[in-house]
Image (tube, rainbow, N blue to C red; front, side):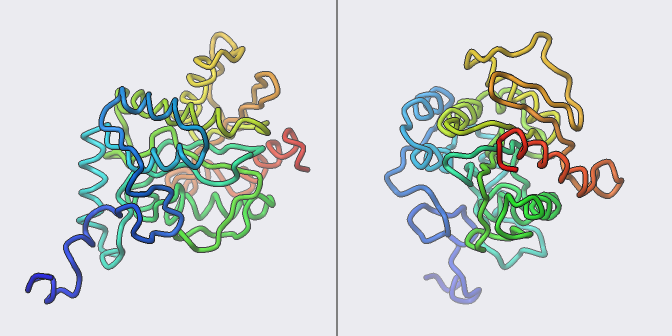
Length: 276
């Protein structure tokens, strides 16, 4: 350890993304996990993953999008003042939850100081506070809060994932970044499809991403594709696709979406999935 590191009481590596095999709770990767350095490698590694565990490990070390890699790691190094003493995850945030879910919840991307900090989608941010409270009331989460990896939270018959796995600047991934990440999204939906009956799309971006994946997989997608709206539900074979306003601060503070509105969405999903 250098004199500077001794003086600060921490090594410079504390400002870097979490490395696999260093004890982060729930880290799916190891030092041997293959890394996708470009879009072609994303496609190859997503297609060859035989299990969800293998897939999420590969997702969590992806470096295919230079702008997103730079941004997520810069955020992890600079940090928000309120989290200045915390180690940030700083890597792509993989899907998590049940391996054989009846319901999938799809979002846009991790928040810079939420999932990018905690390593778990919708964990440690205001959107997650509202979302997990509703999931708990609906019997789909073990706890009403989700604040950090290893906090004991568990999803019940639910899997949660994002269309883009890295926190993007201004919460706006480019079309190229969306497309580069799509093989991870598609492969995860496929590997988790055995008991899947409902997909809840949090926001327009997730709605569009789900329809693209379903169309490419050969599902009988309606034409034209259904317009997004809160409570819109469309059956595709055994699947029900449900639109839901994103529980962002902007939406919850203005009353555009409330806890009861989320509860009603999850009630629909549970009913279709045969969970209630």
